[in-house]
Image (spheres, rainbow, N blue to C red):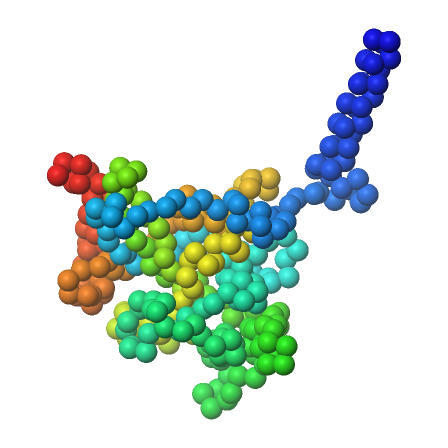
Length: 314
């Protein structure tokens, strides 16, 4: 009887192992292709993967708002820019994930009507759905003349007023993203006495699009930066889509890092363009030379790094 039970248990274990192997096998048993999952299978799963800590207003002893630019041409940020095609069967660039989120109904917000003001204003209504394609067209790249109107053929997204759906246009994607090289983020750095540590949290993100290489030459820095903002996206609303897509890796295809992880762990590099101050100015508003801007950026970064130590000493 013991032998029979042992044999049955052995067969059951072997069956379970075989079934698990078939489900998790690295190679597809039918065509020999690699089973490389690059997306979280369900939205519910992506929501479960998000790390969120509660912070009470009463526990925040110090805070400062910082504006940073993420340049995808920097080596550490390459992963945010590729693949350049919108038809890659496994991966999406960060901008492509953003477009997908807009298609799924994510709200975006217009930039300020005051030229030079790069701050997001989420207390205003979101941009109407039918207006979004107007800022996502190849007219911004100079392919159309000044007097021409961008038709649906040149728009990155097309809005169907009948079905209220947003449709993706592969035709104009590559010509558009070749000039979409930067992102602007609004970040809050704060000290929470409940956790006794310093935190940083991205509040908003905006894609920057340079129309062409010389369009902003000679223009004041903040005015040029303002002109490149397409729209603002609340970062918390974007995270659920970032948590569904893995980032393309350059050195290890089996490495699993979602865009949400990438930003949460600060695997990107960026530079400061401004921080909250009593004058309500960004760095280029008062630092007029590249050397002065670099020096001021270094000063602000040092202030942010030493903030926690200063609070403990206090």
